[in-house]
Image 1 (cartoon, rainbow, N blue to C red):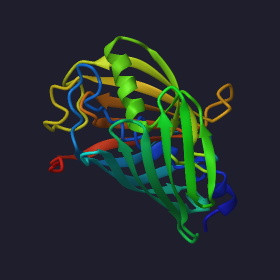
Image 2 (image 1 turned 90 degrees about the vertical axis):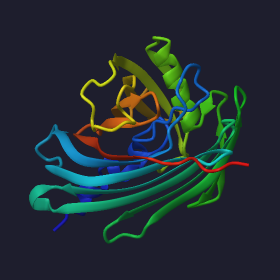
Image 3 (image 1 turned 180 degrees about the horizontal axis):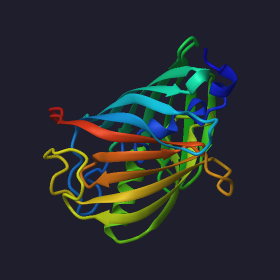
Image 4 (image 1 turned 30 degrees about the vertical axis):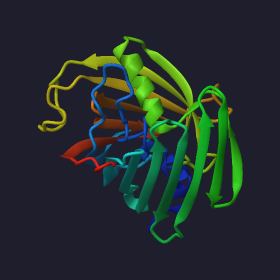
Length: 282
């Protein structure tokens, strides 16, 4: 029987952020706007989930599941869609199964954004979030949340959407810089969908170093290991809600993601990769 008191306290139940778009899990999208970068490759990727580390005997003892991530060029912007299922075992205390769906669109100009999320836990009612946002770079903007309740959120002047944020990380990696901090709005989580994100570019990996999968999309590509820490808006001096390290390829493919929730660490390893055709644009 599942220990629901334990399950409800898990960070993975609090928020969807570890599996979302942009510089977040599996959707580290590098657009053509980065100086010297290759164009973002529309693709579909499948990631297998496993438990990398448990720091407490009371924490989870096994994790399994998959993320199916699709990134498309839709002419006036980019769309991301992913579906994730994760099973978390607590040994004698039972197993929890959780499913997420996330869909988003970001305009090529980096000023417009729409999103929808759905999260469901076995035996519970699905939780849905929906909304949109608009910013003027350097001036901030406003997000309009439609579900679960209607409200608006002010976005600070240094707010970016996920794709633009990922482009900025790659630009700094290519320039040999190490640190980058910005607010990022993607609509996920249980709060206002706005997070402070601290990025540290740890190192560049030579092309073809320990490839996660033998595929043309990752062969002969530069890549970087990037550490990301996520802070609820207004709490940048506190302990981050979660941290992750991802291997980011120059064409937008995330080779692996290691997500640290404190008591345990989850690995998401690339297992399947398919290049998709861009939409025909008028």
